[in-house]
Length: 297
Ligand code: DAH
Image 1 (cartoon, rainbow, N blue to C red):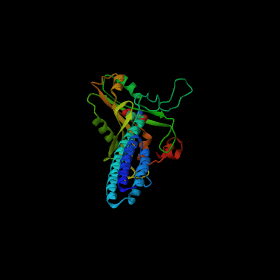
Image 2 (tube, rainbow, N blue to C red):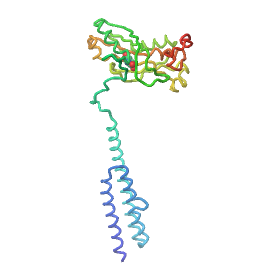
Image 3 (cartoon, protein in one colour):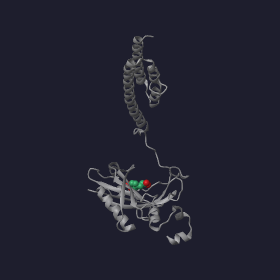
């Protein structure tokens, strides 16, 4: 083979390789596919390397030109790969996001797990919030401030922090110009009176079906003062209740015009509060009927 034929031959091979590689890259639709592409075209055992291996057989002047073109092809393909990988990563991320996203059109869960009784249609309530509607209908359209304590039941695993039967204290205030600041003020006041002045409160956004916005309320851990300990699971915070601004539809169903009235509500577990106040590490003591415990509390 004369030198004049070798050089265009190799340049041609390089150009063909570039075209084939670009076409194949456009077909690669996953990160995995781009990896395979890389090893086929640019890898150590890839096609570009195979062409470059023959470079040594060329005369010096030709070697320089072919080497330069080969290098350009390599850089171009590496850049194209990078671009393709970014596009694919973005698409994969979006696909993952849409697969995970919540379908808000699905119906909600019809009811919290609870206990049915042997009497038809009689079931044990899971929380005291349904008491709100009774209070509102009794007082509307007058402003109201009520506390609704009661026993509640939940079908759930019994642990040191959760019983299947416990108490709740529900509170609701409805009136004109009641704001979230009132809710914060009342709850902070409660914590300071119950646990001593200077308590830190934290309001975390949450969801409850009957309030909007809803919050879960934490207090700095009374055991360690916020430094972190086993009781607060080293977070420095203890959750003490759920709360929120009464949802306009709840107000309406209670007999109040939501354009004129607003309100807040909260629900707390007195056992949990007592546990914190008296350093009781297991909720099950409350219902175990051990007289020594009952006398102590
Ligand atoms: N009912 C909720 C529960 O059992 C607690 C709760 C949250 C009560 C927000 C409320 C409220 O009145 O506004 O977990």
